[in-house]
Image 1 (cartoon, rainbow, N blue to C red):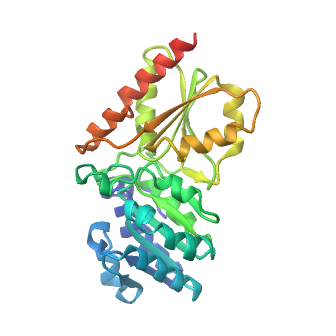
Image 2: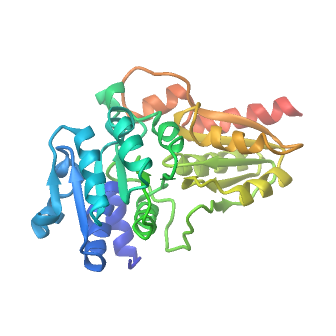
Image 3: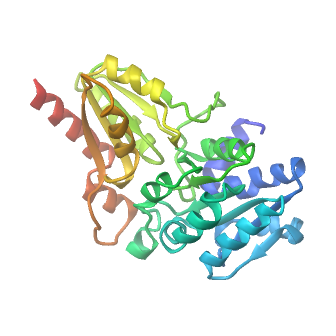
Length: 324
């Protein structure tokens, strides 16, 4: 994968799903022609039209039948193919959970599940199209690797690494078009290894998905107030980066986990579960969804639940002042 200023601009404009399906997927087929791509009536919305025109024999349109799509994908995997199944994350994690559990997780099938419109990027469509519990469901299933990239470049890197595995992967894409770039140049991506984006010893912010950019912006607001925050990109939810967490536990007194996801079962829960096995660990504050909200713009919903850069910085300042 060539990373150039021109490509970075194109990927940012296309967003996470656009960059994967217009670039990463086409590169994959050149290296591994034994690929089957399945969609549940979302081929155009996912940006698969270019791929379908070039490789019509490798594409299966299942229609609005997500459960069937997962079963078919598992069947192709059992016949030796790499299956890539994609639709809204909400329909994957909720409607198709049984099929993923029985036919993908249980059999350890080589299926790459790409959940689009994760979090609340489909904001005005309402709760039916939001995915704020998907990390909890997918993380609980054996054999699944769970990835949540911060921007379009990282989405491509996650996809590239995922296709090197012969085990199932859930790749959570939360960005729409014009997805803000966290990474302005190429970097060394490692599966299961958080990326430390900013140094700071007052508080450690561990974020995932679109919240990485919000956390970085919040750290700048905090810096103006004399609060030094370190920021970590938790692109891999499972397996969890325990080595980096051990370092964080040793070097900070306050941890903030931020996610466009329910507070139960996601990144924050994963960190807390591991932290509970250790002695003398720092206090943790969970930022994310604590129930459903009214539909509106994505920014409105983020503001309502307190995960905008402004609300993140205010909460951290309050927590630090409270602890003094």
